[in-house]
Length: 124
Image (cartoon, rainbow, N blue to C red):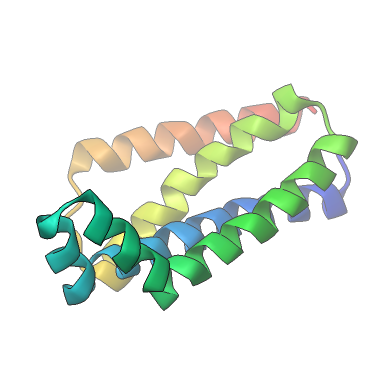
């Protein structure tokens, strides 16, 4: 696997994790929380009017477009395990940006995922 393809895989994973972060910020806005309590229709409207939700969806769309290019260059069985690195990035976002509590078991699980990604990368 070339460094370009590996870099684009990692960029795609990072973009997807960024989309998760932005979507999380969108659904935790006070307006969105109130709408979620009001019902499905209100929640859909609040999501449709949320800049965070839209920005998250745009990031996802860009990462999907990039992912399609990656899949045209690399076997699915090689590329897809790298998606597991998204767990690492989102966990770090949760810890560093959202002040989430992370248990030792979650850290161990994430380290195992990273190990699997390294093994798959070396086999390509």
